[in-house]
Amino acid sequence: MGVLNMCCMKFKPLTAFFSRYKLEFVCSFFLSVLLLSFAGQASATSKEDNLKRAVVKIYANTAAPDYFTPWRLLNSRQSSGSGSVIANNRILTNAHVVADARYLQVTKHGDARKYLAKVLFVAHETDLAIITVEDEHFFEGIKPLSFGSLPKLLEEVSVYGYPFGGNTLSVTKGIMSRVEHQKYAHGNQYFLAGQVDAAINPGNSGGPVIIKNKIVGVVMQSRAGGRAENLGYFVPPSVIKHVLDDARDGSYEGFSDMGLRLQTLESPAIKAVYGLKPEESGALVVAVFDGASAFAYLQKDDVIMSIDGYDLADNLTVKISKDLRTSYKYVTDQYSIGEDVSVVVSRHGVKQTIVLPLKSYERHYNLVQRERFDTVPRYYVYGGVVFVPLNMNLIKRWGHDWVNKAPIDFLQMRQEWSTPEKLEVVVALKVLAGDVNLGFHDWKNWVVASVNDEPILDFRHFCEMLEQNSHEFVSFKDDNGFQLVMNHENALSSEEDILSLYQVPNKHSVGLFSDP
Image (cartoon, rainbow, N blue to C red; front, side, top):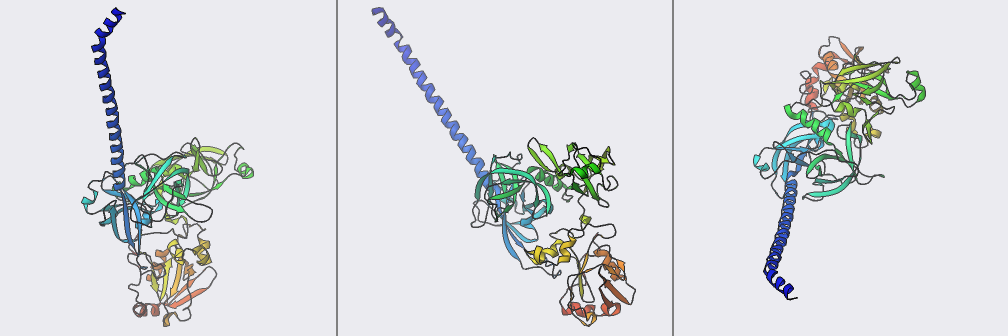
């Protein structure tokens, strides 16, 4: 025992030394962990603060053209949207936020000042736009946001923006519930879209969908009312990238389009008629438009079996990942204008591979032209009759319920395709009453098919026929044989009085004959 006590006493200073060292080590370790924790929190807070600064509110004063009176503008209205700061002092937002804008302002989080802004680039079909603030001081202290990948199904996302009901930044959370092609409400075109169940309200438009401080989408529209609640849609990264690449030279080219119409082959009978085996799949070509990408390469009654290696299902979809299937259009959307895409077709039962040089979407695929923004409406006044081309801008002038209120003839023509002989529809919109047009004062929304029995190709051709007319009388006819007739000399001599009486600034829209 004595020896043991002596040993303990002999090593006691050493034990105390290690105990003290251990305590200091433990304290140092926990202090380091604490500091790292604080640093991590500070870093996270810093990133969150920058994210908030990079999400801006956009104020727009818009005045759209009045397509019922095409030389005038509708009353100005004020609206707001959201946007996010990206590289090179640019702000990414929705096209519908800035469409027909006459005056734009932007504010940033925590700053009451409104800065003057301008539009740099617009892609209406994908509802995306790029704007900037002229005062470069606006971007001081803001780190531009970068882009991430398309969220996975059921992955949590955050939606940033400035919805109505307040001026401060709002953040809502939800999950990515679906990915598929949807009709973009603004441009009325089909593109890939993500669906989230986060609350999205007016004013959120153009704001970013965020994961880990990166943009993974741009909010574009919500589905309210009916049986759908808290459903919102966003433009996915692949579409955003395409638009940003397109914007590099400042000239809008848009997305490629094969220029054809397809029919499903889900019926075993129709599949057999076109030489496909029961286990084979594809889509039937029912129309190829003149001058389009597929023109002179594909034919009516061809069966497209694959595009760029993607097998085309009988319901016009392709499989783009293990558990995701969407419209075949996804494949060509990945290409730029001028690039080639390979297509495997079955023609009269014989398979062959055809390479198509892709072109942009052409406006002449349908007789009724799609809705356009930031453009001057075309019109031509002859003998007091206001003539215009038929387009969706005019049809939608009947209001939100245009499907039920617009003239039935106009609505039916939305389903008709253009041909090389007929690219556009001309409408006698209304009559500015005068002696020259006596007997036709109540005519309106009347579709004109020919001038002096010459069929109308498009609106410009129609106007040129009137400008170059040498006949004593001009006869306008519809497809049913009804006609509106005027004395040409009287129509020209009454022009100045009618324009002055009804305060029409010009006989025709600016640039009507100079535009391509």
